Length: 149
Image (cartoon, rainbow, N blue to C red):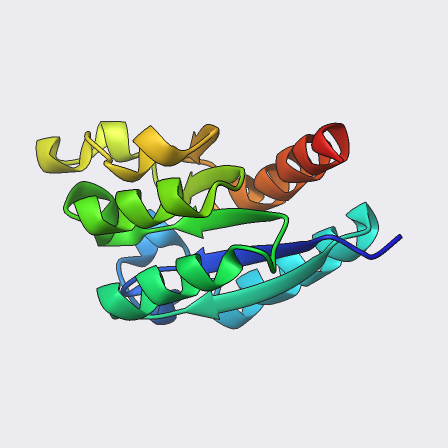
């Protein structure tokens, strides 16, 4: 049986982890996050395709490429959570299980961050747990993929 592929897609400014607002996002880097995800995926019997972009169109293209290729998507849409109906539409179109992840608790932050369009396309949302949220998202998507196999 092939190893399920999970796309772990990250939106704008996550390439600045470790530098940008460490009091909110911590001091670990995007490379540290990728290493954590790779380790967790291996433990769970998953393969991951870990990516980050600052471009909305590129993120949407990556989501679309998941159809027929990936078993599920973990996405941290970052600022696009609150603005991108197009991203939400692309997640609906691929018909895959989606887990939305945010490093910070978006509900404890500025009011404009309290609404996420992406949540409407997600099976579940994890926020406020930092890097641990990605590990939990991988565990959840592994269970979903197994149940739907």
